Length: 428
Image (cartoon, rainbow, N blue to C red; front, side, top):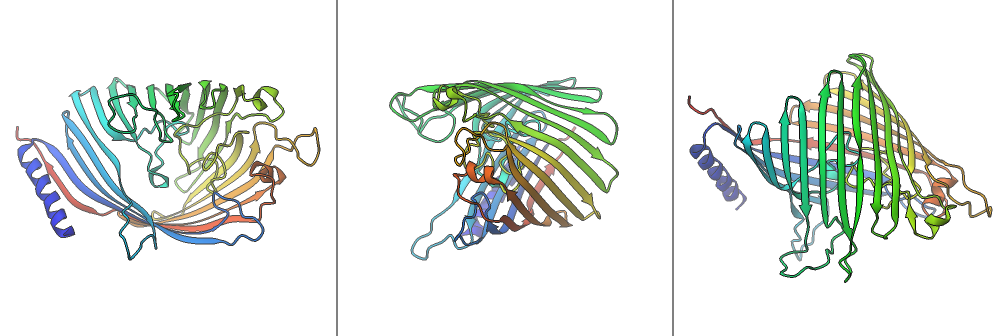
């Protein structure tokens, strides 16, 4: 049966290739095997807890079509499951559509992309590609313009539960509607972008009330030399959150990226998001919020690989992340990365053991070590270890219980075979 499906797909692609002009068509796969030994990954370890071990397998079938100055299309079907996620009495599928979009070019400078797509911008603090960490997709229309080094993108999305002839409250844990305008320009050694994003969230109750939050800011990089670059990110957030609180929040990132040579490079910086102060009466009365919502930024790419912040639950006090990231390209195939993080709360936490006093801002230190080995262009493997040394403040952030040693050991084996490729040049 699977062989017949594959032959059908190839027959369809060959038919498209025959009727079209100059074009490229490819069918690719992605297999990712990810065993994890967890002693506190995403969920802190407490006294009496036992370490967990599991293997996740993620599989994709990727179809791409490109006809220059005419049409682009992408379709990605994926399966995301754990080894042992099966039952001999039933066959529970975990298939989903990760991407399904088509892009029409009206001329070389203007195009319109429609369908399920990813929004990836700048350093991905606000809009990023989570890739295999989740299955995030945006069902949207994206108008794209580029000319003379200037890029402009205008996006609009409106979500519904399904086919409905009357307005119903949106019930999913996602935005009800979203729009953004993004612009990017490169001037000499400076690359700068500006974004304005409006997001509407709905509680899913009978009121059908949509709460709108606006985020605007910049993501820039200045290349001082061939070896040193400065990165600056700043976002400001206003409007109302889904609890109907007035939002006044910020986020910034400052980085110095230094490439010593082809072997050694460093990234030294700080990422910081504002948060709610427990000693602030307006915050405690739920009238205002200073918590910065990172919306759809990278889940696993920032704030450490242990994923204690901005992942499973909102980190309402906000976090300052001071880091030094080192990368060593030992050979053409082997690279080693080490990330050292120092975390601190942005806002104040009350100390439950001392009335009227606040806790120290220091949350602890984390070290992420990652070894990458590329066996070929289509096969690579990584081995990683992460450990965090927390404080009483970290304990309090997660409810107050004493957190035990927290670390994880994991491997990622990735294969990306090409099943089919066709390229045809239009006759002159």
